[in-house]
Figure (spheres, helix red, strand yellow):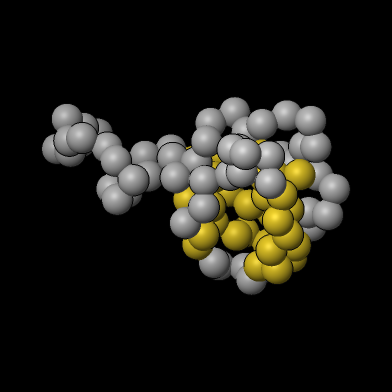
Amino acid sequence: MPDPFDTDYVNLTSPAVSHYVISPSDAADLPVRPRALYVNVGGSAVMQDASGESVSYELMAGSILPLRPNRVMASGTTAQLVAWY
């Protein structure tokens, strides 16, 4: 299908062009650092930033989070998240 926007510059304010379901891990960073997260199934999510700081969030299904975590921890995470990038 033709994409009239395929030559446009992609930045953090433009729509995401790819996505993947996040598999939480206490040991591995995300394969691609997202520009935002979508909450498929609500619950808790423990996210780690680039400095290694982890914070737990209580999330509602359907929420969009403007966060760019390096890692979503398995310990303490019950929500199902989708990464947009």
